[in-house]
Image (cartoon, rainbow, N blue to C red):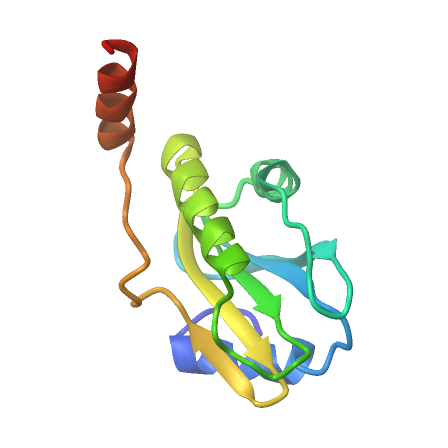
Length: 143
């Protein structure tokens, strides 16, 4: 795949490519300003039911290739497409980091052999901008 044209197109592609992996992993799809795919990279490999994803591993790679943005892909070998509490924690962490670093976090996909779920339009995706972070920091330091 050379360019992201829709969530549906990307989701089907991801299921075909990564949906049958027997252990949990995390991949990054890095894109330019026109949503052309710069590369796909495995950033973490875990066990049967968990994976540790660290921002430094993801952003180091994205900065090195001069990416404009990315989609995060995480598989669930169990087939369950529902995000766990750990998945939501990772999602919020990357939303914060992306706001600070200014690399666009376009979507978080959970995939399995049964399909995919995009979390971009779910209520738990709370957009945070740099000004809001600075306001929070200012309020914390005034206490």
